[in-house]
Image (cartoon, rainbow, N blue to C red; front, side):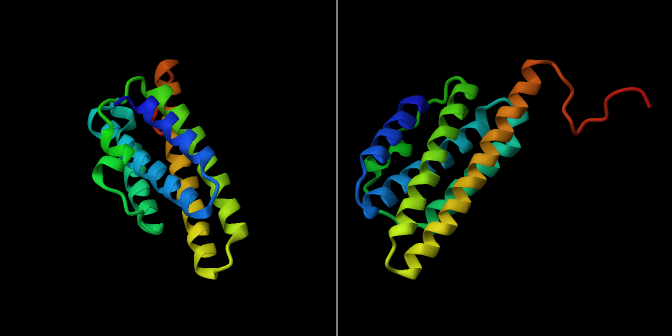
Length: 160
């Protein structure tokens, strides 16, 4: 399935989740999708994205490990249905939006948490969502540099 369709499915499911357990399941699904998209871009994406894409995959996996794993079968994990990313820029913009919504949803769960363990789990998951967004934004920046034919900021450009 196309990454854009999966991102939109995750956004809808997150928006419709009302209870903390359902929200955590959808946050887990979103981070699993970020991991899958990062993996796919690391292998088959534009060369300038591969390092950050690998980092996104690692952060997404770590974020999934922070949350109490939902009891889902492989067929229920949306990220397992990812077959293509399509336009990297459009996918990254949509993923950035999803990860922002994940952070907001986690704040809501943390604020209502009666258990201190759940609160800290949410705080760590918020940090992971922010780190995932940082990776996505860096990839978008690199795509913009490529699109405009500018030298990368870390390259030695210009006369000496």
